[in-house]
Image (cartoon, one colour):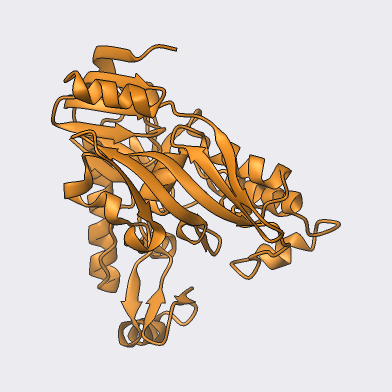
Amino acid sequence: MKIQVYKDYSLKARNTFGVDAKAAIFVEYNSVKELKDLILNGTITTPCLHIGAGSNLLFTSDYKGTILHSCIKGIEVIGEDDEVVSVRVGSGVVWDDFVAYCVEHGWYGAENLSLIPGEVGASAVQNIGAYGVEVKDLISSVETINLSGKECVFRTNECEYVYRGSLFKRPEMKQTFVTYVNYSLSKKAHYCLDYGTIRQEIEKYPSITLKTVRQLIIDIRRKKLPDPEELGNAGSFFINPIVPNAQFGALQKVYKDIPHYKLNSEQVKIPAGWLIEQCGWKGKSLGPVAVYDKQALVLVNKGGATGADVVALSEAIQNSVRVKFGIDIYPEVNFVS
């Protein structure tokens, strides 16, 4: 496959919201060498944006610069002992394909992240997480190249990982592109089941194995989240807010059954979906955009929505939560204009 360069390119199929924006230039490459060639020959102009599967993006207008997409594939074992396997994975590998590969090979750690949309490169940028697991706990290093052609490897402790964030999300890192992600996975059986109803649900299965845990997570996600092929969405739209104990205590006096997850001795995480639902938004529409009727954390494109339509709904929801609870919630989805 050759390097593909397109002009005035429709991004409708490149974002799971199904927003019909365009890019002035769209480029796909298949290797680090091809990316270097694109940099050296001046094909990549600024502004530029590197995307994965577009599962965490909202285009609020046409993009007047260059959009890049990695097609770097491959899953390679680069180290192994009796307890741990180290794996190097191309940034263009579909994330859930990698999880399935881990499960098939008996590698523990990624199974709770099953069915999260997107690609491997984005997993390291976004610090994806679900059901008690964050990808930062599996990553050993991230390989990158920047717009000057310099290659750099970031160890996990250099990536500045936080809840749904990393060094790579900083504005000054927007011209640094992930090419490979290296993961360390366990060969010894261990599971993360003490989150939500997982332990209760797993009792319905004949035994606890990697395959049954993966299937359970897939079943849970499919019940809660719409298929982007049928209803445009970006999965969880808002980040669950973290509040200090004092603020949570005051809320709990009013809302005795408020769900929460104690992070440490000082902070509590509150599900944003619950806050949104309490504000009456679940299943409600604003123009061609709606709050999903099965999960209030998800905004959906009912058909023909623009990025501006989605922004209008998200801002209305944020205002409702702020007025009712005194809490600011912020989008997990990245707005691009």
